[in-house]
Length: 338
Length: 161
Image (cartoon, rainbow over the protein chains, first blue to last red):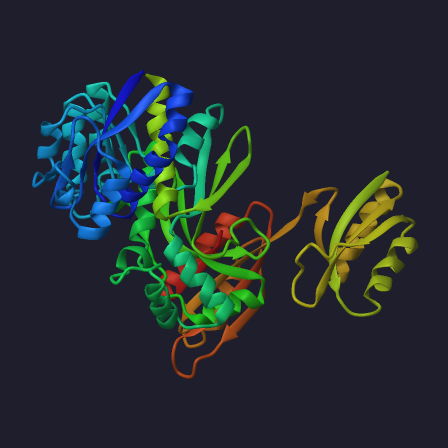
């Protein structure tokens, strides 16, 4: 039986989800593909747990939960962090789930380039490095002759990148439009159904943990814009970066606008649009009975193709296990292609 | 020959009769009439599908008559004739010369402002939903026109997907 040794960088919601998903699915992967998945290192923001014989997923989750630090993992705890870990273990694939950084893309960028340089495949959920340095990353990946997959970076569990690149391989894709941020969709949906102001709805979303304490990335459309850039590059082959996107968030969408739209049979949604002509994130009107009229934190993408006409997908755009599902799928696809 | 029409009439009693009369007068025969409730017509209007039979010139005469009567033909033989584009504008809608906004859109060939709903907010900025009826293929022109006016008059726009 072959082994696949994994380094898991980042142990927040997504990282924990990956550990959990591997624990749940490793027997299935073993049975179907004859590969034994083994986490040889896992790291949070400042410490890690490293064991060449493999770490126990449940114990990793328990250690993090109870002590907040992976350094407290019995016998294998370590004060090593970040890029040093990649030199400390022998591994095959880097699972990179550190937080998105839209300023300089670190630590994701350095970790990814280091893994490529060492000839390792990478699966990521990160948006920062893809939105800022897509071309550089792909060039490095190609030079290294390794795999690089990032389905989880757009739409969480919702399949979109692999869908366009592989499932729709026969089709030319001219545009993608979608609801690419769950937090803003939740806020706009609640404003529509409850008639609450933007400020009150945002506060509610924060209390529920749907919006972050600093909601800027979501409500100002930054998160959606990162996804637009990733889709533009990976699906439409447009050489674009974050600054090429025209971005307007939802903080200036008034209740008046939402109510007026509703009276006339429309909803207001934050839509990310990708086409050769324009990369744009802005609040837009969608018809009440159209596929775009989805509620809550759901994500949606509508792909316009030449042969298949329009294809629409919908799914959970965030969530620990949901996002991890996309990463595990990427991981399995890499294994299958070996 | 046969012809399928989808048209919009006011959703009040007597409207159907008013469009059926000219059909028989002009020598065409009504095959079916279906209320298309699933088509979202404009406020207080209903969409109706009518299948007609008759000679080519008689059918053309019916269409000409409907146009003369101001009946809104949505589709003729599966070909969409008109479409609508809605957008929300937020800003000083009235103060920045609403009349001028209308005139400039209407001045574009194939574009007509068909509806405007507005929520006033005292002296503050107001919110309006504008609906433009347009000939097929003029969507981008209509969009660009709205954006041009919005930029000039400092309106925020929520356009239609």
